[in-house]
Figure 1 (cartoon, rainbow, N blue to C red):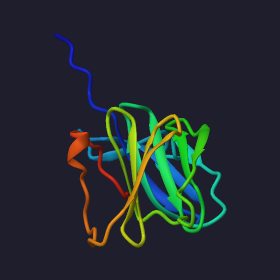
Figure 2 (cartoon, rainbow, N blue to C red):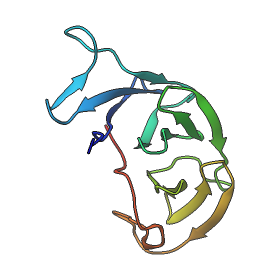
Figure 3 (cartoon, rainbow, N blue to C red):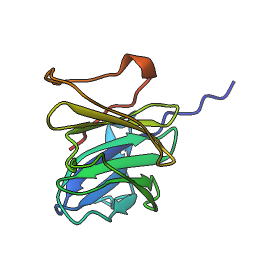
Length: 150
């Protein structure tokens, strides 16, 4: 029986509007790359403002990132920009993002606003509430990748 190792990524929100993405080797506990100073696997661009949050799915090969006063962008783990997700009217700065293995994106905005999207860019729902969200892990979407890397 041949077991395939899990693919892990490390990202850094850098240069204000850029996300840098590296491979992480869990066995050696190090970033994988060539030479003494590994270069990023991908440099994700497209934001005009500082990137506030990001979520990676190695399984789907997607990186979702949100910027201050800007869009939520969907990139591949190779760095290709696929699309922009339209924020609900009047909301531009996501605080947190989550991505299910099924490709559903959930964005938490200031003021108790939560919006969900398909990875293809269709907005599924937008809700506003009075509760304060500190950590969220929507129960309807059972499995999630870690969110908000920095």
